[in-house]
Image 1 (cartoon, rainbow, N blue to C red):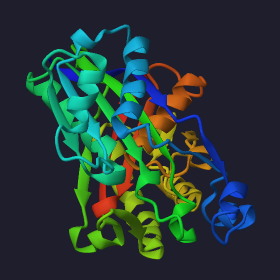
Image 2 (image 1 turned 135 degrees about the vertical axis):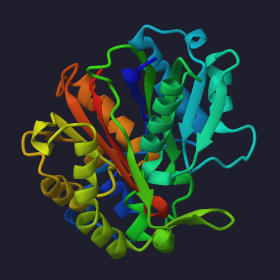
Image 3 (image 1 turned 180 degrees about the vertical axis):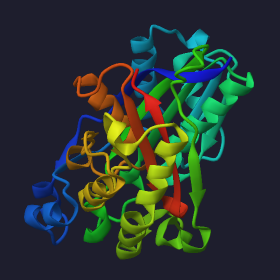
Length: 315
């Protein structure tokens, strides 16, 4: 088992759409205020009877079907989430039960907005080490459940959803499908993004996150490309954590991916935390904006002021 690749991706969003006009009826805000500051126009909101593991299972089932695989083919399930309310059973075990996956290793990862790229790297490492043959990697969050719907600076940001990838071993050493990860954190600044308290509530220091993301992260993202053997101008697409359009656009520009499609799913989905990268990536694939084999930078950042990025080949 020389390397790993993404065989297929899938995504899922709840049916209910919350517009900026809807939010204007809840808090002191407007469509102009929201779009000018964060670029978001709509977001999907899950109902009380739609738990995180249900969102995750829908996305995972779509990825499995696209890959032509069955639940019995999976031996590792990784779910990146920061909105799991219960401590046990974890989301991965619940997803495995929903899908009927027999006897997998089942792990949750809480790295908030960088969770999916951390989970993808973990799956890649497990496959390379020979401890897994085929993994299901999912980012899923129900941010509406931890939002303070009286705080217009944060409630306008959040949405719910899930994205998933089937990761499997490849024996093509010349072009492994998942490049080496570059990851790290700034733990002394971890309080800049928080989901704390009882009940838990999302809060952040927006200006601190903006400055960090737009000044510190471009060079790190370029290093992730270098580790994979690509120059930024070689990339076909860049999928950053969908935090805020005012962060995504300058960050993508500073990376130097001048020929790349830049995912801007935040405009219709809001900030879905760990779900944002696989959700946006799956939509690019579904719409045909990237082709099989294209190099794509996935780069997550945010909570804990953590980051993780890698270049992958499009399924």
